Each structure stands twice: as structure tokens, then as C-alpha cells.
Length: 304
Image 1 (cartoon, rainbow, N blue to C red):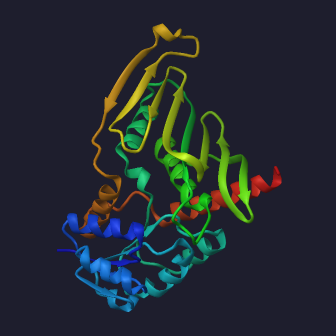
Image 2 (image 1 turned 30 degrees about the vertical axis):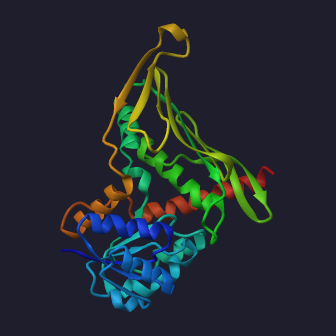
Image 3 (image 1 turned 180 degrees about the vertical axis):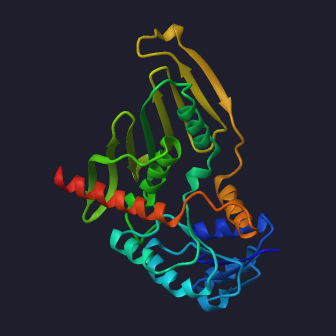
């Protein structure tokens, strides 16, 4: 049985703990909060601690602490020499991301969960196959009301998902071109951004919507494919060009395995620890996501 050290057991950390146990791993949780440690035991943790050094003999480590603490936490655990899986975003500043790159870490990967969503992977297959013709546009929408995260603003909470969806479907993160943000004081609560061209990537993220939306649209010269929500198990495909009349377009609903993406990415990490292929998102990818987000913020200030 693999023994995993989980650093951080807040709202999302508990989900990670539950899925690790479901996947057959033993988990020791490290968290400075006594109540969280107690809840971790109630959820099935093997042991709990408030000292990161207690995890030095684990087979692998998962960092689920607030993103603003990642540089400090990774500095503390790098000497253990164990593979590391870090929750997104890697950091909330490019300066911290560069500092992390200089830590000489053991193998380190990012938990970019939407790259493990089977619907997003299906859209990637459609893009690469040419089934929709030339890919012209990828558009993502990610909205809800407020956020439980208090260490950073909405942009860093939401937008990393959309950039990595772009990476999974298009094969790269397009170059930023323009961005507009909604600021409340110093906090960004919404952003609409444009990256690349033919294919372009448009991301729309906000914590100012009363309704939760998660949509991914892939537009090609010969059709459009839509993942309507993170919870559905199908992609809708409409075949037709920009000249096809509504009554002449063809519709297909293509289904996929709706296994939970968090469980899939954790299974990938456990498989790697057993000698399998590494998780898809390496440290360099995490750094690039942070760099692009900072560039988008700079563009929003330039365009203000």
C-alpha cells in the first residue's frame, strides 16, 4: 500500500483525502489547524501531524495548502526527495514561480484537474482529428458567486483551469492578446481574456454570477462541439458550416466515461509512484500558467 503525505486538509484537501483512501492509499495529513487534523482522522487518515518533517518517509507528497504558501511548503519538503503533486495554481506570482524553479525539487507535478476531465479530452480528440474542420476558436466560461478561497482573488482561483483546458485541447496555451478585469479594491473578481488567433482562446471567469456555469465550446469550420457543464457525461456536436441553415445542421451527442477527474488525476500520481508514466502536468507547465496569468493582468492594466 502506498503511503501519501497530504499537506493541507481544508475544503479541497478533504476531497483529496477521501479519494486517496478510495484508491487504496494510506494517508498521513499535515495541517497546522487542530480541528482540520481531527476531521482528517474522522475521514480515515492513517495519522495526522502539524510537522512537515513527519512526512519524510512517505512514498509521495501532495501539497494542498493555500497557493500563497506553496513556495514556503515546497522549500520545507524538497529535502525529502519524494515525488510531489501540487494543487493549482503553483503560486500567485511569477517571482515565486521562478523561485520554485530554482529549488532543485524532486519530480514535481501540477494538479491541473481539467486535463483529466474526459469531456475535455474528447474535445481535444475532436480538435486533433479534423472532424470539425480547422479549429477557429475555443471558448471557456467559469462563473459562480464568491469563493471560499481567502488567500487570493478570483482570477487565480478560476483562470488556471481555463488555460490548462486550452493546453489540453489545442496542445498549447496561446499568446495573450487582450484582457479586461472587474476589480473590487485590489481584488480581481472577473476577467474576460483573448489569447491567440485561429485558433483563438477566449476565457470568461467571474465570481459575480448568481448561477454556476462551466462551459467549454470548440468552434471549427465544419462544426461546433460543446461540453455544457462539468457534471454531464456527453459532448454535443453540431455539424455544419457558417452557411448551414438551422434545419440542415446535424446533431450528435457523444458520451464519455464520467469518472471524477480528481480521482483520475490522483490515480495517475499513484500509478507514477508505482513505476508508471508521470502525470501530464510538469513543473514547467505550472510555471507557464502563472506567467501567462501575470501577462493577462498586465494587459488589463494597459488597456484600462
